[in-house]
Length: 254
Image (tube, rainbow, N blue to C red; front, side, top):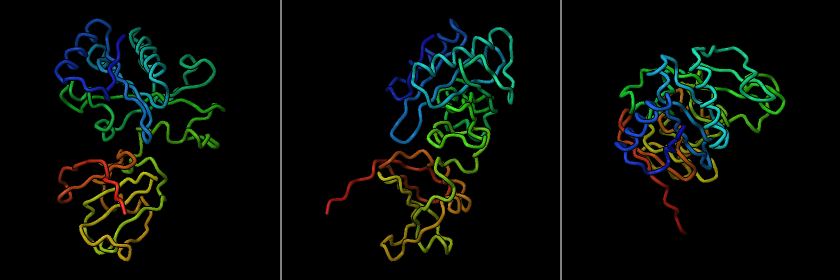
């Protein structure tokens, strides 16, 4: 079964036509999104909801070829009229480790299922996340899960009110005016991983303060919309609720 990589520049009409053709022939389309320096790779299905009345499937953190194989393997289970059950341990997906499926929260659909949203012309479809274990066969929610893999697969049944991949207590930078109620209008994700959340006031060093990342997001949940800014990118808006404009941060030479 074919796959389309969302990072390739494919005409949207051509992609939609390809998706429809593959669903008709194979029962689904697999979409693969390659990893970046900041975000993990992932793949998801399109068509399982239409053809089999079954939630779509998404998985994170592996090579493109393995992700493609996993989505197809799970789809074969579904095609046999076997519904995937959340919270159940599956030992037949990976050779030597367990797998489980989680319900994807509706608030996380728009972040990962772009082509599926275009196909269904809606975000109102269910999805399940295939979750894998570490080298000690531990799930991310189990004690002693390997820290190396902690951010390779965001858990989409939760974290919809805090979508950033970093720890909630991560040191972040904002302005004194934010404490006084001024809105965040500019967000910078620096090359070194730091996050800056700035008001439209003077952002010189004497106005900058340090706060936990969670504090900023709890005060303005709309900041979750830019959780996936790449290293070296920034986003700005005119007011809270306005559309974010993203671009590469210009390197300043001194």
